[in-house]
Image (cartoon, rainbow, N blue to C red; front, top):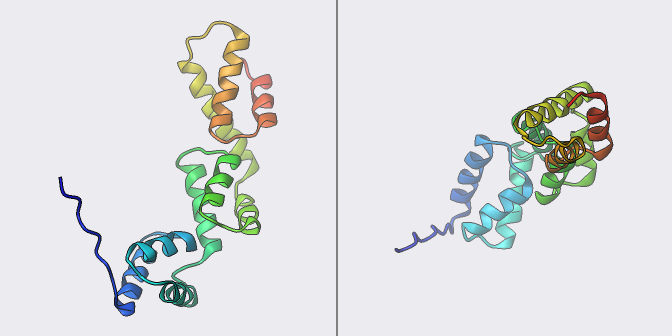
Length: 160
């Protein structure tokens, strides 16, 4: 099987138009745009100039991206703060913006989500031993990115 050749873009104006469309479609981090521009075959100076223009024209906004990422991962995928933070670090978002974006999560919604995913998982566990059951539920919540102390609190207060 032949792999399709990647299209190389040499014209900066064409790359700018494609980058605008790419950013308008969905919120993107600067690193995602940078990677995409390099994939298109652009050189470093052109990549940085395009990123500057995208920021000036408000196509690219790191704070807006971080808040959208947090909202999406929490509301859609029910991720905890730890997993969301790791995802933002992976996208090279600054620690200050990560902290600011994580503050947008409502504390009561966070606890409700944690309780909901633990109860949902508890319904699927066939384990009878109480200690093993609690351990598995805690490990599940930790794998979803929730904090240990909050998970322990929810497990202590519930009758699972």
